[in-house]
Length: 536
Image 1 (cartoon, rainbow, N blue to C red):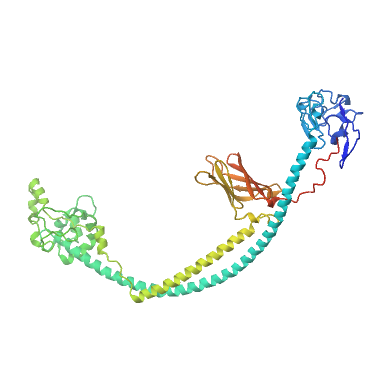
Image 2 (cartoon, one colour):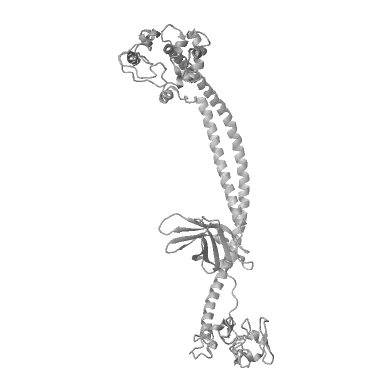
């Protein structure tokens, strides 16, 4: 059975104390390996004679009977590593020709040439720990400054909020006073503008009535095909667009119905008829502005340009084509009728184009001097009111911004407050990553392209013991056929505030390493050796 001699070291002084225990057993488990009594497997699976401990045969299921051999696949070997950190290695590495323990105790029977490097490793680790401790110490001092500045800044912001609230109250009173002035100025302005508009509309109504009367007269002349001063049902039938049921058959009975069940109407009675047919008469019209034959009668000025060298009035009685004087002549052969059709004036009244209507529609004239003066006074009141209202909104926005900042969780002593409103970049070979604490995380291609949101501020998400060690940013831009991007920011102690690295351990889930003095804790004293051992 293999045993080892073990010693205690107290404050650098070494006292040789022989502690017999099986090889590979830590001192903390010495009480389970008593030589003068049977050994019970540490998992309670069985009890064996003590001489079967480290006999290179695995008896216990947990491998606890072979702490110093490679017999059990699930066993472990304890490296004492005096001067450095103790460690456990899998029992399969015992005597495999490779030195795993810095004190070489794992290769006691392999013939491998190993050197004890524990003291050198311990020295290097102590130097590294010393450097980290110095960083932590400097970072902790910076943290105290940050806390002091944050508390002072918090007091200033709270004072500013109080000041702005007083300013807001004064602004609200000013806005309300200017609102009354504005409303008082707008009332006479509205009345004057309404009077101006009413007068103009009345003028336009007169103009439209005159135009409608002119159109009615023109329509009467066109419908009075025989120029007898009367419009009959037969003459009305020549305008098929007036068919009441629009079934393509404009009968004489339907035409007579439009005339009020009378045979003919004169110009006086036609006014009533016109009110019933004018909309359809106009809407169904196709403008005819180009009638080249010299026999064509003159068309109204509002449908085509007047022919040069013509001073005659529109539609004189002697210009009515002869073929309309006798309805029986319409039964002549088709060729003659077609030739004559090319010469007759349009049977429907051409409508004006939109541009012509716009030209006829007069623009409202400028306001009179008295009305314009009222408008100027009201506009000045509106401008002053708008300016005061904008100032009130600006004050309100300031208050909301400060209240939001004050309400954020900046740590137990407000040590993270200095990060608010700041952004920190990390440039890699492909991307520029940006962290804006308490706001968002983004990624942008280094050589151009759109920015991608990797998450917006969510909450602190560290463990219960160290909740301020992790920041969570979620609800970022969605991945294609995947979840929304999110970022976890791991905070570590450092003298500077820097984004150290960014990785994507899972699809669309990013991990960012971020150093800041705000997480530095007061370092423990390094007077004692961190690897003082009670065993050798």
